Length: 184
Image 1 (cartoon, rainbow, N blue to C red):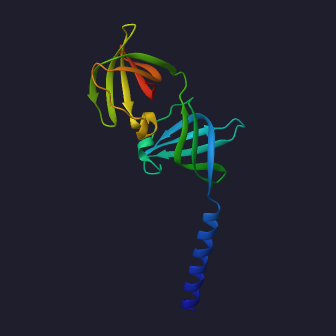
Image 2: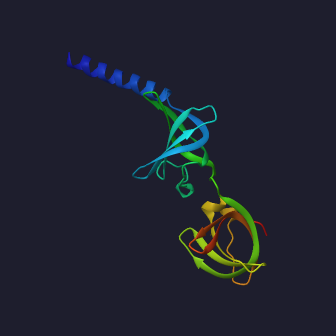
Image 3: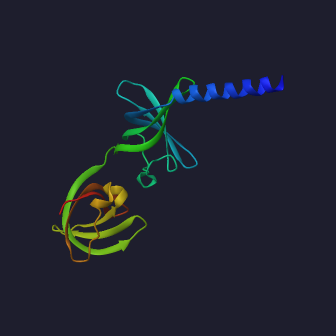
């Protein structure tokens, strides 16, 4: 009798694991972030696609295929993610393995050309102080995660002429640019 119960339990576990594995599939989800719930290793973004479907995307460093590509999103951003799609009750969940695209709301993009005044090393790259041809000062954040791949990364030296493209923003009174492309 005891052996029969053990065999029955093992058979049940095998069937359950087959069924649970078959309900998980890889998918790509795109949409606008309508809410963010902070978590231990990251956050869950509520993503609403153009058809009004809601997905709950768990975005955390341990879940990403490349942890260096972790990005923080804000409400109103548009995001495209890839990962395992599954359901919890009626809610559609996606365990995000890759952030394919992130378009931040109200971020101005621009190209600047100027001369490197100084370079300060950072954790993932460096910040270069750039004086543009018009005399404006920008602090350019240059890193592999922001550029997308190591092949696009380049270190500048003081006095070097550069042309950069990225998002312009302010920190206090300082002009900043998160560099997405090195153009020269």
